[in-house]
Picture 1: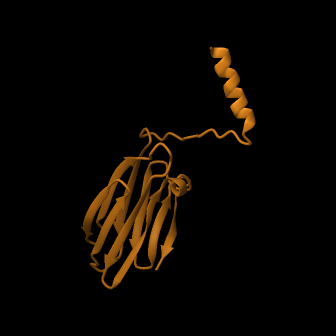
Picture 2: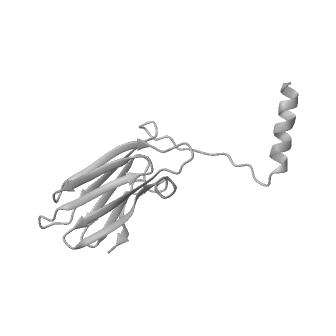
Length: 137
């Protein structure tokens, strides 16, 4: 029986052009991701932040300047985890992806830090230890 299964497996592997082996990097938190979104709009500007994924609605959060919203989760098994946020302050309104397994694999192992500023959204690259303006407005 084992010989037959081994033969079938080898035939299947050889009949495809590519063998794909998923590789996951485990972080010190056992795969848990932490997203933190901080209001850095300045001058007492209040940020209305509403984040969600396909499965979770994190609700509306009202953030005074300097305050933040954070949440933790694990990426799903097929690496398609996606969170997006809607932002409002004064006469501005924006929506964008705040976390995506595909994009954030190169940015953060466990700490996915975001800053909302008057000129855009900044994402922290944990591996290189620097900030990048990911979205401009």
